[in-house]
Image (tube, rainbow, N blue to C red; front, side):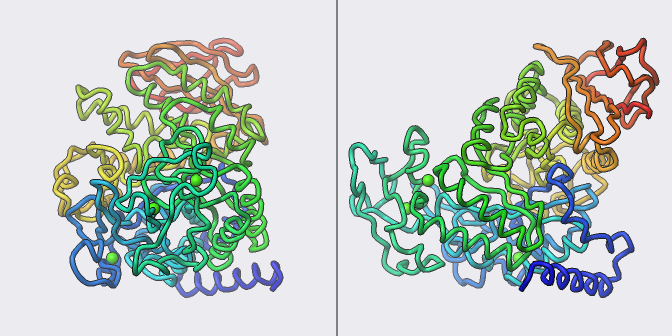
Length: 575
Ligand SMILES: [Ca+2]
Ligand SMILES: [Ca+2]
Ligand SMILES: [Ca+2]
């Protein structure tokens, strides 16, 4: 089928669907969502198991027995809780109302239900232990449910970005030399040939799909990564079977697998897990093939962003993966690290350094506009938790004020804002990983029910999907400003003020078509600031889009800003 007839048929189906649902006129423009650039999006990042339960009949994934069989235990943070794709679809109003234009969903593929590694016992509720790359995990629903979710999102003009894994599969392969697991890494120097003797435990010989994935010959089989040196790409991630991504068979296999999801569902992008643990040559071939596949499916702006995880401000590391691997974008971990520093009593020099390094990315500062920025995530913990960890003495009110300031920065500074689900409900959490993956539906996990939150008192039996929450309202208001102002989505950014100590951080962004300036100013300190900084000579008068903006420059090219503690202003020059 030609691309054109495929797109045309898709359009007809969409129109019929809209007519059927009686959607408002605005939704009739929905096909335009394909034209939106990555930098126009606001992404809501969600684990479906923890969002809402739309179908209690699938909570155990069709399995029977205790949690070691079904993976279901809604009282434990490490097991399935019952949330699913239908729950997500039925709450698209909530997500769109927040201002999100795209949803990034943790891997939906069928996982190994329960896995053990050392003392850890848990389920694949997070989706990163894939056994069958061709179908939806029955705990989350069916392929039809995923179809319905994508179609419902598209009908609203929203995009769906799927989280995918290539570095490894679930942990099935064992080694004769250490059958219990926790096998130390065996280097290529010490073991130039076979490092370990791999085998498949009885009953798991055909556990993976497609079938070729069951042959240990397509894996590195060198034992656990130490996350240093060659083991970064050749080692098993805590026992997860590390694929031989240097092999052309593996490359072709994954182009087929992930090309097929684009063909079948017409999704809008991929977030690629553990990107730095796969060799560059793999990405150099895989990424263009996937973009080509998307283009052929009528998806010209398919978003791909890789996870190159770091806890430091290290933009050069991130940029390297756009230049060598050719990732169109990578998650901006440096932004996240610099924001933690800036909002926890450090200065804003690191944040300035992050943006100064934008020229290092392939495509330079223009490409950096497409980097997904975020505050916290499902691995490192929520932003509010990280601040609390650094400053246990912060009161709830102080944390809330900082969270609000951080949201204002996330939604206006350069990059594609990623909202970690639940931050809009004031969730803080008590740690990283599973402790940061709380339920938004009424939780049965004791700690999730009782842990401290930001905002008004919370009734654990009421769940956490309340659009009236002050943080939800704040994010929605900021998202409206961003959506209405091209300078905040597509505009180049120029630094105006930063400092080694808490204080004023200011930038200007410029509307790419009109050249109009929008000034962003943030006070990260506990004291008011009253400062002057440079603006464009043509910018004489300003309107406030948010916060306290002086109506005019003091003199040409000099603008004065007065901000109370932890407040911000977004000031647009009048045309
Ligand atoms: Ca369910
Ligand atoms: Ca293994
Ligand atoms: Ca690897």
